[in-house]
Image 1 (cartoon, rainbow, N blue to C red):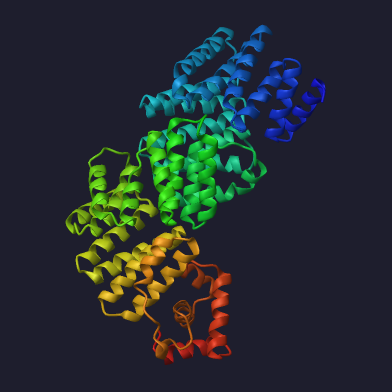
Image 2 (cartoon, rainbow, N blue to C red):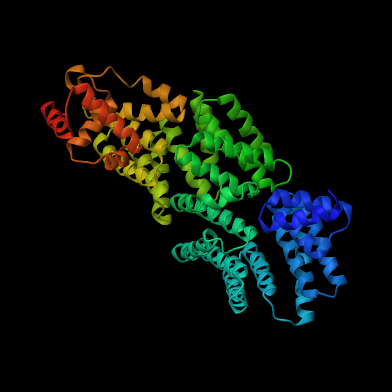
Length: 545
């Protein structure tokens, strides 16, 4: 293809938002003849979106100088700001980033022209205020940027600035206000009103904020809402942290294969040209999934890789030692980790692991103390995920202390919240504990129903260590009470007898309506019953309700 042909193809691909095609065509055109500044801006955008950071920086630098040669200081300043934003995420380029920002400020001041691009400059300066721990000052600058964007009706400036306002409010512990503003910005993203680069930045930032404050339900909701947008940009290179957060959400909702694929994709794409934080976080996320699946050697390799990249391998590595039967080593590691100062998100994760590990080590008093701290954190942050985790941890401690009735209350609370969050693995872990509480209270049938429901989920997810542990707790079904039904079918029958619909049963058991319908059909067939009413009568005749 000729240089002019490649250029035409690149411009057309850019208009269609086909970033890989844009990148390849404009690179070919640039090799044939140096691109004009406007086309260099297109090349820089495409390079940014497909993860070619070095090319992006080179194209923006050349575009900047090209506009200076044309005596267009506004366009030159715009590219200087873009260079600063591109370099902010690279620790080795911080001085260059502030240098480009200073140049942009000087160019804007010298031309004394009011324009929308000044809004981006204000956003960049506000970002530096956040980094210097001045969220109030950052909020003020972001507010000024919103005014600039509104004056020039520039949706990109408004979206980036309002997103910044929302994050600044979160830094000031004004979560309700901050998330309300972020939700508004995300609406503009889902409607396709915002430039893809800004959309990607906002989306990844919102996922990060949700992770830090354990608002995984909001993160999941926005990811679902943006699924079409993501599908329309398959070649778009998300930031490393964003890939990891997406993997976490997929894991939470039980899509473990997809979660592992996302984590491994992050490991492969981010190993060389990403922020060191991401280089360590992505193998840690993959290690967590391999640990849960029982692939301990692979998990250990990835925890070590995360550690070599500067990411603390705990509490995951401590939990791996516990799964391997090395209880003492696991307890030593988690006690040391508890002594370190960590962010609230990391601290809460450590506390959850500590309760499990210390109970296994028979240190009930220490486990009790950590469960209480987790509860205080949950009360402070008011996040559903933490409330469920706290109730489950406190329930496990109560069970270890011999208070089965108290444990049952806490575990039921945890299970109800996990269902609301739609977290099947967490539901199964909680139901296993609930089964132990039933057994302690002398209700062996109730215990078996809980164990069998948990086992089904573990097997479906591929949680082999959990499934193996649970196998020893499950006894042969009582034929005289259950007849030909499995434990899960008895559970569904009990819910039918309470008048619940298939949809309500699916929600209660965290399974699909299709699965419920199959169970109902099996029940009616096995018992030779004509209707749900007859099934209800059968349940009462066998004292199953």
